[in-house]
Amino acid sequence: MSDGLQVSDGLPQSTGDFYERLRAYEGKAAAEAGRGKDPVNEPMIRHWCEAMGDAHPAYTGPDAVAPPTMLQAWTMGGLAGHTARSAAYDELTALLDGAGYTSVVATDCEQEYLRPLRVGDEITFDAVIESVSEEKTTKLGTGHFVTTRMDVRTNGELAGTHRFRILKYAPVQRKPRGERPRPVINRDNEGFWAGVREHTLLIQRCGECEVLRFPWLPGCNACGSDAWDTVEASGEGTVYSYVVMHHPPFPAFDPPYAVGLIELAEGVRMVSNVVGVPHDKVRIGMPVRLEFQRVDADLEIPVFRGGEG
Ligand code: ZN
Image 1 (cartoon, rainbow, N blue to C red):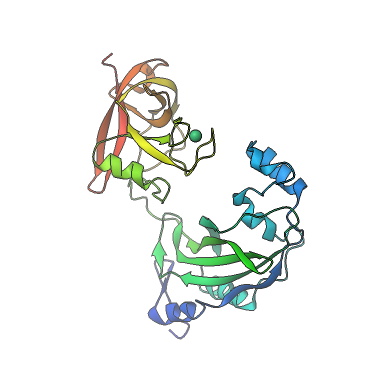
Image 2: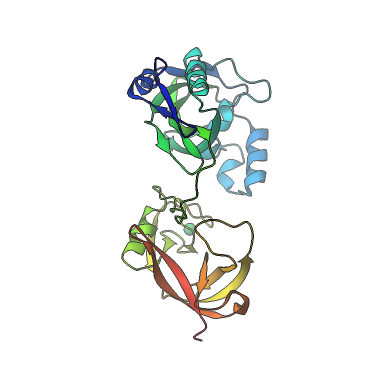
């Protein structure tokens, strides 16, 4: 077919030709000569910190820096939008729309920080279409991942990069496969899942103030340090709270079942399944013990068995 698109079972399927047309956009600008609408400023920093509940002292006072995670906020166009978006990006979007990939979902972003931003810094940015994936089938539908990388500068110096990935896809009613969802493993939590594979439950411990934290995070919420090591959980815990899921039904699960918020003996809490007890016999305060449940060939998960204490 000349437009590189075949349709079978109602699903668009990219042929090699179509993918080559998509890939031709790799390396092209997604946004050019963007300028932040406002310089880095105290009111936006204050609003951000209030919304995040972040009272770190570095973000106030005469030597204040902006929270690094605000990087993208300084580039946003607001309600009126920006004129920085490139024709190439609009063309790529139109090409995907025309092939039936009409829906979009933001899947993830990664940021890197190279220097702090301070009040008064003027922001410029540009963005490049870094990659367009081959056609992928996800639970939402079949489509292509489009990754853009935005370089944010101040006074001509690179302050940070913001890498943003979307899925442009054709939403379809797929037959449920009944497969348990995979955990999302990233740079921040891969150590946890490596531990699970070896049947250990690892809790992060701040390298500075030694506060334990779970789930895994890149920094300490108590002191802000990014230094950490791990301690292995004993596996003992109690049900701190729980819900019994009835609805909505999900193919991989068999309701009703109990989802517990487990307080580990070490003091941190984690969400997991309570097994070995009928869903209507789970109680707050019930002692539980860690075990590893094999879901399928690729996945083991930590769960908590009750009813033996
Ligand atoms: Zn700490």
